Image 1 (tube, rainbow, N blue to C red):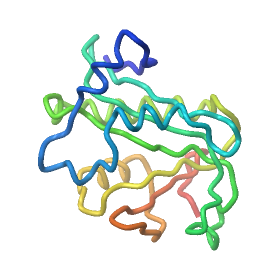
Image 2 (cartoon, rainbow, N blue to C red; image 1 turned 60 degrees about the vertical axis):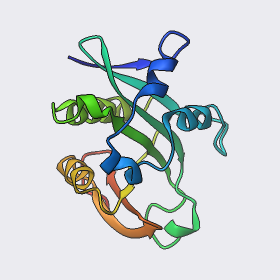
Image 3 (cartoon, rainbow, N blue to C red; image 1 turned 120 degrees about the vertical axis):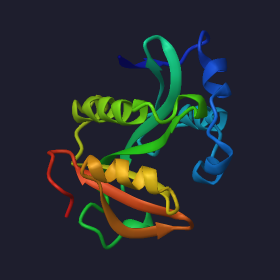
Image 4 (cartoon, rainbow, N blue to C red; image 1 turned 90 degrees about the horizontal axis):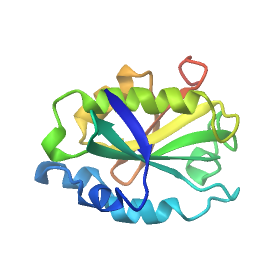
Length: 169
C-alpha cells in the first residue's frame, strides 16, 4: 500500500538519503535536501510547498513535492493558463533501490488525488516539467492525461492537465 506522509524530524534523514541511479542524475535538477529546504521558502502568495515522503508498506521509497502558485512566468504569457492558479509538481522521485516496482505510478496517482481535493485552494491546472530525455517520466505523465505545452526551458519540457479531468487547452 502506498502512503504519502509528512516529513519531520523522524524521517528527514531518510528522505535526504534517497537517490536515483547514476543514469538518472541528469533528470533531477536538485537534491532532496535542497528541495526540502526550498519547500520552506514561500511562494509569492505566502504559501509554502508541500513536501511528502512516499512509503510502500511502511518502507520509504521516494519523495515528492508540489506547490500552489500562479502560472505567471513569462514563458506562459501566451498560454490560456497564464496567471491562473495551479498546482505545480516541483519534485518527484523514487529511490533507485525501489524503482521498477510500480511505486512511482501508484504514488503519482495518490498525489494527484490529493491535489484534486485542492487542499491549498482552487485551481484549474496541475503543471510539471520533466527532463526531455526522461522517456519513462514522459510516458508516466501522459498516462495521467498530462499534455506537453510546447514550452521548453533548458532541458525541461512543460506539461499540464486540467484538474477537472479534461485535457488542458
